[in-house]
Image 1 (cartoon, rainbow, N blue to C red):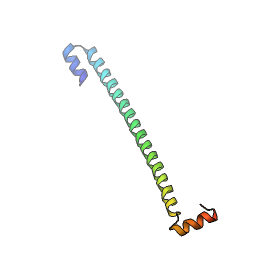
Image 2: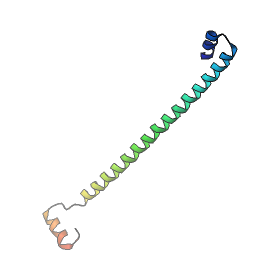
Image 3: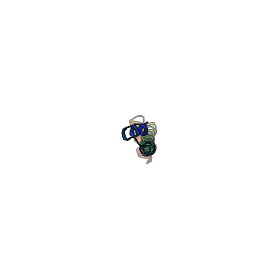
Image 4: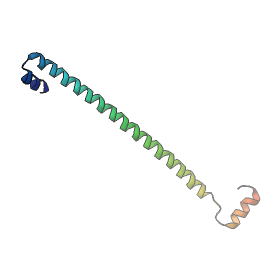
Length: 85
């Protein structure tokens, strides 16, 4: 399409061939740029998942610590006396 437009404008067969190669090169370039963007997007998603997993692990540890806490003052005193705290 681009080659045909260039050929009409310049009126030469060489311009048609050059236009086709330019169109092919541009297509390949755009494809490679698209691949690069896809890779960057995948990298960001991977990082986001890793951060979320880390935050979930911290939250799980906090919940486990909450489950082990003393229920009342008497239990706290017993733990302090036994040296388990």
